[in-house]
Image (cartoon, rainbow, N blue to C red; front, top):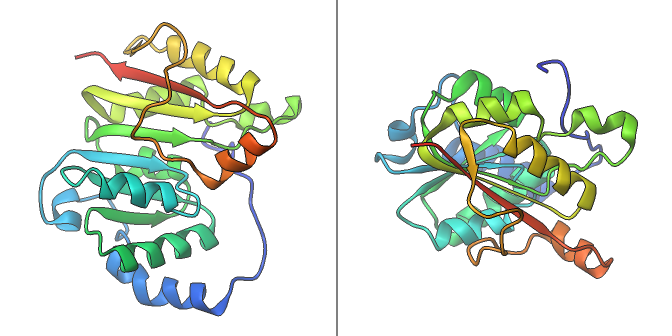
Length: 219
């Protein structure tokens, strides 16, 4: 699936402040090219959480602030979201978040070592609602196998979506990965540690329920 894009490109002009944030704060909170060296990035060896698709960054900052004993690696393909997260990190003075601008699965495949992640969060990935596009959904067997390989034994893969058909697909795909076990029978109660995202708030206003799935890698 290396040639299948799992995100929808967005185009548009950015405000000057966000452009400035990329230039000024990218070197502070960004990640150098090449294999991810967590000790060099964070100055310590702590459990590492990968946040796939951090959006505008609000939820990432809230979780990292409430979880100072773990480090967060946020990856987002859309430039405006990266810039906004950088601004939030500066104002919050958090030091346990670093940001990658680019394709999440390229990062996982090429730059993260096996058994290097304590948890992976995949919150509200693009649902690709049209049937002909569903091959682009992120939660597919080959990608799940790769993410599972990058988890430590006992590590947690936490997905969330408000697309009911995608939730059922996630349940089937994650349940089909031999190295993962569902923490709950089907969907999980909403975990208290997962903040609302802007996307989720819009979905709730439109009448869409959210589904959480928590799967743990075998010890």
